[in-house]
Image 1 (tube, rainbow over the protein chains, first blue to last red):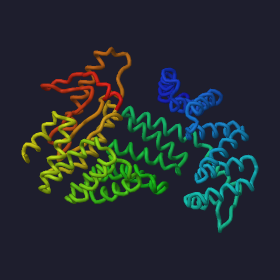
Image 2 (image 1 turned 45 degrees about the vertical axis):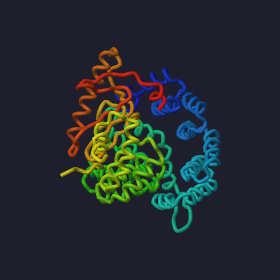
Image 3 (image 1 turned 90 degrees about the vertical axis):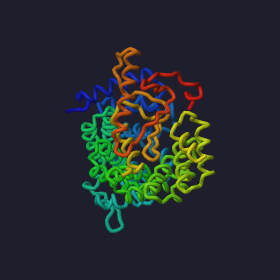
Amino acid sequence: MKPGQNPIYRHILDEIGKMVQIHPNYADLQNQLALLLMVEGKMERAEIHLLKAIRLNPKYGEAILNLGFLYMETKQWKKAEEIFLSEAKRRPRDGFLQHVLGILYLQTGRQKEAAARICKAMHCHSHYRDYYREKGVWQRGTIHLDPKAEAALKRILLYPYAQFHNFVGLNLAKRGKFAQAVKELKKAEGLNPDEFIFHANLGTVYYYQGVYSKAIQEFQKALRINPLYGMGYANLSYVYGLMGRFREALRCMDKAVRLNPQYADLHYNLALLYNDRKQYRKAVLELKKALRINPNYLFARINLGVLYEDQKRWEEARREYRKILRITPDDEHVRKRLERIS
Amino acid sequence: MLREDFSIQANIRRMLARTDIDASQMEFGTVRGVVYIQGTFRLSRFNPSWDSDKVNQFAVNTLYLLEKKIRRIPGVSDVVFQLNNWKKEKGHWFHVEMTKEDENK
């Protein structure tokens, strides 16, 4: 069944269409509508919405890429090249853009330029070296662009379709339709197995569904592709926590914090894990870090007060409880704790 | 045995995704089994043809259900709601106007 005939797709298209009418200045909505139209083959209308999205937010990377792919799909090579070259200039360390340029040149018969871009992609990230080796493009230190390898690389042109299934999957998950969401996200993953976010999203839906072993597998796949994806480690940690595998939960949350040291929430969760393992000194340190990032982080302050209390650091505990009661004077739990140690 | 606060947190995160609540403006924390819910309560989905009374009634039911579900999580001893736009008094939920300060948060 073509996406346009799919009732779920029609429902989402109607909904996004209405949202765009209500909020015409939301770049995100313009991009989502364009993606839905692209998949239905309505390229001219999709182009209009992508151009609107980019006008509203000239740095909107996903919309820019979608427009580039739209031009590739409609064989407007020059326009596509301009977009990807300009993006590659802006983000010279982004291997994906070099990779796409390589394919664009392959499509237009510019083999030498394609090979140069493939080399650049490998320099940007070692992941591409493995990828090209797997596809038979990189063999014994040289680039081989035979028809079979070319065909494998051209799968990247399915990028917008994979994005579409990912978007529909997320939309279904938001409505609580997890089984259908899994189906869509699997389609996205099938079209572009190298996109870490598809694995991460599938992992999240499995986590919400309570299918923990599959959630772990998907998060691990995402992290193999993008080892710097801190939230992937955080989600993996939550799943391990639900399975009672606290040592692994702690290890993953610690990695998440190292990769995203500016997220107060992650420090807070790491503190809970240390606290649960009775490593109170480390828990206090993490809570203090969370409070340095967000001084109004109330739960972190309550936890800190309780930890001080456990360590018989009465004055420090009282100080934290008084601060909390200044913000939330109705908190009976904290008031009782303060009364008990006053 | 007291269940770990961390697993309570992970459970709430999962549970919230399975409700009709838009949790993007809500925060939650757990302190020795006591769950705190703060921020602004919003519904993520409801029938657009409903009038405001029906939507409010649905919100009240969703809040009762939320509390019930959280209390059912192993290790949870109490739930403290500190919401900007809903208050619970003598067992009943009331919608309250948010202050300008809360709206800007």
